[in-house]
Length: 193
Ligand code: PNS
Image (cartoon, rainbow, N blue to C red):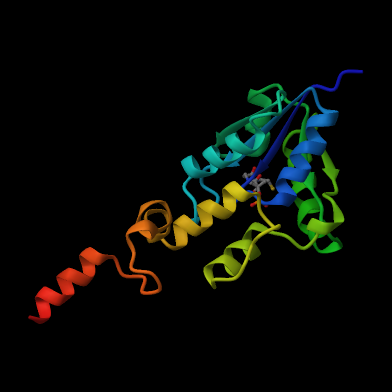
């Protein structure tokens, strides 16, 4: 059986556990799976393409037949450039169906030799989307279990730039229970004096 190359196109802003689940399933049935990040998907994405590549790289490092790439323009043109035979997409719930059907049929119209293959992620991720993850994280809610740990970490860094510094170095210098470093306390004291 010729299982060929498949592309899994998307925005992955950020990658979720649902995406990762689908990548794992796709990697089992295709010879090679190319996770392809659309470069111009949104005007103001939360994560740069570079950050998304980095996250996806670390999430798929152990998967030998998976690689990460980016593309611009039409998905079918990109797929053809790789000699891919399939486009992999996930369907979580019936609400995804209409959009996915439209896209699959449009892609078939544009390139009849390419097949779109749909797979269902694990049901525990059926409500997880990048958009909702961004929304919850931006409002300070927990996203544990919805995204891989490396993404959770990146979300925290992104939404609280002081997080890295505070966690990595500052804690040991802080006055217990104050959240203020001795240096800052001293500066404040001098200012008052
Ligand atoms: O993760 P997303 O945002 O649902 O992915 C959507 C994506 C990137 C697969 C889709 O927008 C796409 O294929 N864009 C490339 C442009 C294109 O080929 N459009 C015609 C397909 S209908």
